Amino acid sequence: MNRKRIDPTWKRVEFSQMPDPEHSGKGIGVIIIDTLKSDEIIKYLGDKLLYITVNDDFTIEFTYPAYEQAEEIDDYENEHGLLTLLSLSHQPIEVNGRIHTGISPAATFLVLNHGAFREGEQERLKMGIDWLLERKERFNYLLWRSKWISDFTYRYKHLFIF
Figure 1 (tube, rainbow, N blue to C red):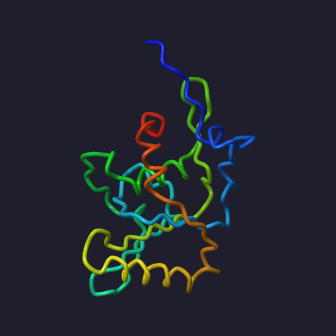
Figure 2 (figure 1 turned 45 degrees about the vertical axis):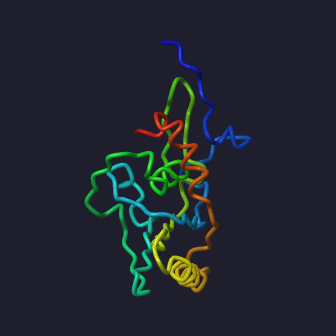
Figure 3 (figure 1 turned 90 degrees about the vertical axis):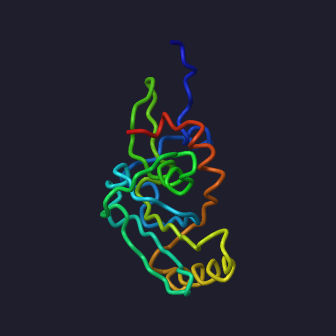
């Protein structure tokens, strides 16, 4: 089969060179506003992945999904948070002679689940953002819009399975 060779993500977003897996993003916290299920493919992140949940009663909990038991995922197309995380953080892999790696593999990732599409969503989102703002110095974060990058990642999901 003659498949079209797809350029690595870092090349398509016009980086001049491949991100260094040990240093690119180091010291930066990347916020992803979405849900996240634990999966075997994120175990390598360890404590560089924090999942923050704002509950319906406005309490805030956080966990480290890389240390949790993997959940069953039936349809990766609906896993925007996971696909976004992988496109940013995955370790180098070779596909059709090209090296693919995440854009910021050495970063810390903060996934904020604010209970979207339910009553009180705006209040929970504000509370979650406020919680993160109070900890800005600790996480030194950037904000990434999950839906755009997850659509891209799903389209090229065969590149992110490792």
